[in-house]
Length: 295
Image (cartoon, rainbow, N blue to C red; front, side):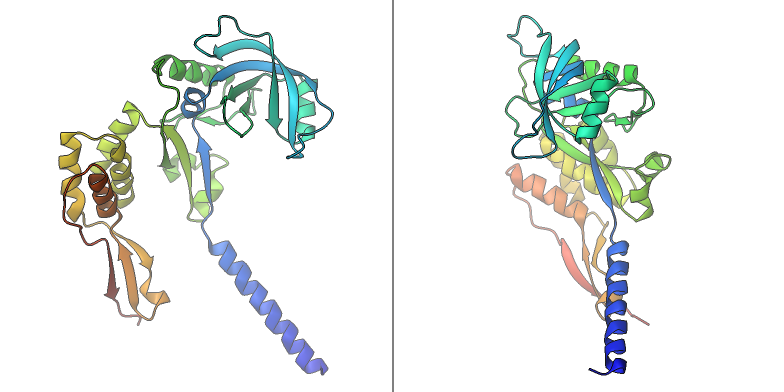
């Protein structure tokens, strides 16, 4: 191979890599967080404690899962038939060894929420002042330990004793809410933060408000959330959305020689909910192609 051909090949390869990088960078970044209410209401055991010992060997299946002995300072939630809180618990914590060691050395206060039959390690929240950033379901960002504990206790007290698990729903957090937080990097790429919240009366109220929004995304999200709340009133509301004018691009015309594809997401969410509820309704136009000049 001549030097000229070799050089041209290298240039072509470099151009391809730059193109691929641009394409990768152009993809929106998204993130998902769980609000404190969802964390604690779906846990069987919630307590505040400090790590006093760490097993030398990591979990055999995961190099960053450590079995720790945690002394409990305060129990927020436990089994209905557990008469007394235990003074300490054996807990598997999924963090790097350095982080776990620092927590033990500094006697860091940790909020631990454990699901009895989950294969995943429990949720661990470092309550050290200055390190907190925990979301509430109403999009409030909590940064003080007392605020987090107060929100956790309130959610636990409001959950029915005969309900072990709540369904959860992912809400899109408005960009203006994350503007001054570490999650702003997702908004800068055209992405967003989704917050896992419990399916409860507060979600119902949010969904009902969203249906009256002028924003397409809000109405689509509200229609999806309403699926959990079947009633005659909500059946009537969703039927009015079968002709919702809002849509989003599936394919932009500039990417397909002037032929675009759109999706009517609000209509789709309403139709799916109604059919799941057993309502006989005519399927609306949900996807369609359209022609647009590329000049």
